[in-house]
Picture 1: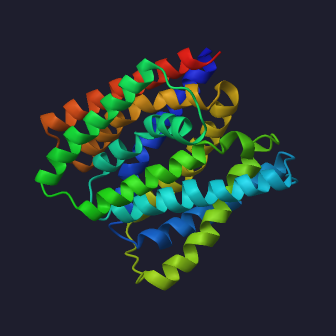
Picture 2: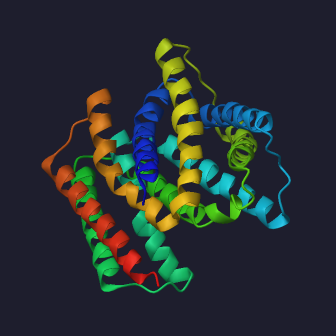
Length: 290
């Protein structure tokens, strides 16, 4: 992994970890799916417009179009949709911790559904991750955390796992920014009718909402997604996912600083165990590569 990839990975993980805090702020003032569908519309049009100026096009193969649509629905529609709804009831730090399980779920899904071999180190990492989740969930549930919000967050990470396995197929044409924009427009088109049917719209126009919405649209929305696509193309899904071991720590720290969310020693213990599990999984998967 070269220096440029390390810088890209650190930039991505900082943006990604902060997204839960900005989203938690935004859903206090607006309906989550309405907010998200508008965000994706703006981000998607912006990305497609810039891509066109750079000479990129949307001439994709049928297989690539299928991957783009599925990626847009899974990562943006289901993953972020579920998390935005969940953030009405659970802390941003808890949502970030659950989402940070991605490297563990990717490794488990690759073994269960794609026939990938699993080393002893990877198995230990998966067991450590499960233990860390048990520690945190036990503390949060006993503290009154909303079970519906927690289940929605786990649904989201499941969708993100499937989306991660599609990244390389979706970006194989090289038109990365165009594809980022297209998958956001797919999500916007999918979420808006759901919002119309199931949400009672509310929007409280405040400077806080405008600031949080602008940040979540441009930074985690466009910049982080673009960096993630480029990082996966540069070093591969497994190595790129290794940066997620920082997400549990950064997610809870940012939420604690910005939102003053309370943290217990069991939260920190669980985060450390999960992070160790992620490191073990990534180490084990590197060993498995021929």
